[in-house]
Length: 219
Ligand code: CA
Image (tube, rainbow, N blue to C red):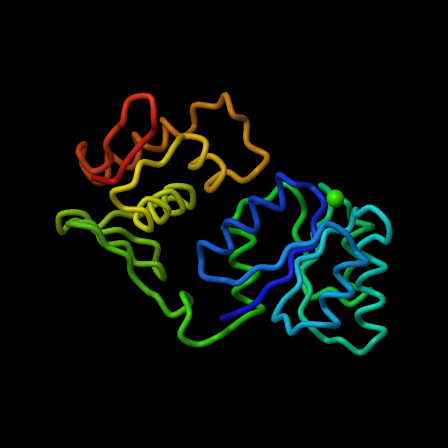
């Protein structure tokens, strides 16, 4: 099992990343500061580090510099503030392998994680998800429902994948927003309802049930 070190001081963002990675079968260690990140990475074997730049105490650049200075070649994905070109350039010069600017959706991060960690036998090799007459192809991003094929937009795909991985469970609007639109979503937005409607048009009206006051469920 791949072991990922997440260094992020924002509780909200850290929880979003940690829960998402755990639900995809990764083992995750989380710390909120650079000093502990260096201690942990010296003491244990990690396959990947997700490193925030803005940290209390020594910042992400310093952590990266010390890691690389000590000869540690572990893949590092840096998290930078929105549109910070300077940070991005400095991250690569400091030896980062990839970066994400905030805000990002979990799926974007997951794609980068999978690019860096390729352990055979993990979820990476999974090619389809299905439930009743719905079959989602994870490579082509097409869905077949009752034998009819449909193309999906990126959001529809991410939302349907989330439902299929939690078939039969009620997913709250908040959970869906957080998973599909990322941590920077507007909680008052009605995009979830709009996209539920799009999916129903493709998959059939009964495919996703409304559970009053709670959310939605793939029936
Ligand atoms: Ca931060």
